[in-house]
Amino acid sequence: MLRKKFRFISSAALIVLGLIVAIMVLTRHEQIQAASAAEKPVTPAATQNPPAAPAPQPQELPPGTISHTAKAVTTAQFLARAHLSESSYMTVAEYVDAIAKANGGKTTFKKGETILVPGIEPQPIVEKSRPFAKDTEVRAIYLTGGTAGSAHGIELVRHWKQAGGNAVVFDIKDSDGTINVPFQHPLAKKLHNYPITNLPKYVRYLHSLDMHVIARQALFRDDNIAQHHGELAVQSCSLHQPWRENGKLVWSDSSNKEVQDYNIALAKYVATSGVDEIQFDYVRFPAEGNQSDAQFAFQKDPKMHRDDVIANFLDRAYTELHPAGVLISLDVFGIMAWQRQVDLSHTGQDITKMAKHADVISPMIYPSHFFGMDGYASPGDAPEHFISVSMDRFDKVTAGSGVVIRPWLQAFRWRTKTYSPEYILKQVSASKGHHGNGFLFWNAANDYSKPFAAMPTMMANPKIYLYTPPTAVAQNTPAANGQEKTAQPQTASRTQP
Image 1 (cartoon, rainbow, N blue to C red):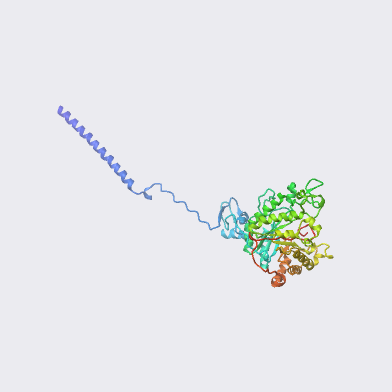
Image 2 (cartoon, rainbow, N blue to C red):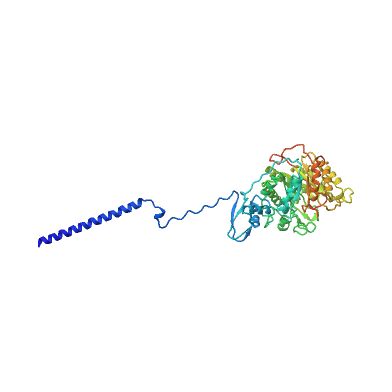
């Protein structure tokens, strides 16, 4: 019995030992398989969830091109208008063509479409004034701010260049106080849309045509200041409110330092935008209206007179602006060449004093404006007489000053029956023959059909019509000295009717 029991126990022990060994062998086998699997590289065929394919890289855009995703149906013209000021293109039409070319000829785009917009330039654009000798002949036309910034203005400039012109005068600030470029100042009239949205770009374009760039700035006749900043306007002694010239509220106080500072600040801003010359117009006191009722800040000093105010302002403006490398020119009444006391006492335009603080004086010697002068019933039809006499007088009154006399000539038909291309030629030849250095054509509507018709004759006969300076030393540089500019005869209005 004991023997049987012993055999049973021995068999059970062997079975348990065998189970233990089997468990150890199976466990070791699983470990070896796991290790082996970890060492094998994973291939796409061995995985149930292969990794996602890499995202496609966005296509690199050409230099100067941006992409635009349309949020609604849009057009190339809409995009051209939106990006014109930051682009290298000067007109919307040219930019529309460029956008169409970049998009396979398309000019209309659906919502969600990606549109390529080319020609975008780094901002801000930087342009510098070009060295220019003040006695270099200038052949210029005048453009309003609205015209200058338009496609029509660009075409006018191109046409003028082709005809033989080499300069453009355009409005930065006109006599209604409107500033045609973005300029941040408490006194500046704010516009929703500025005619010239990017002044350095516009100047750069004119320079690319080899044009001398002249920015015209109306100074003290300023409707905006007179109407919205009454404390800076000329004051009425009798009414104790802003003074009116013939019923119109248009004059800021020329002797008010805040008014002067504002105009100098604008001129300095424009000078940093690359223009070559800043031309001051309305650099005077009002010449019409009830003068005895007009009160100015300078009258607190009994020793000061109107001509002192103008000369002192120009001294300060010239000192602050000339280091920027720009020429300073002045528009003055043509009648001021006669230096009559009545004109001096009203306008303050003493040409001898003004010439000390400018590079160029541009007298406005429009024949039609010499009312009742020298016995002519129709002065507008006697251009040779009034231009030659005026230029001789200006030459005499500025003798020794070093200032250049570059006149404004009449390019409009007001008060003349003989306005024509020949009329233009008579003015230019008379000016050239009497100390005139180049010319500026004025037409308030920017209609230069007659000057354009006269230019071929001028360019073909330089000895009769064109001025050749004796020297060619650039003088719109920080070290150069300068002189001033002249205006127009017996009228208080700068523009023709």
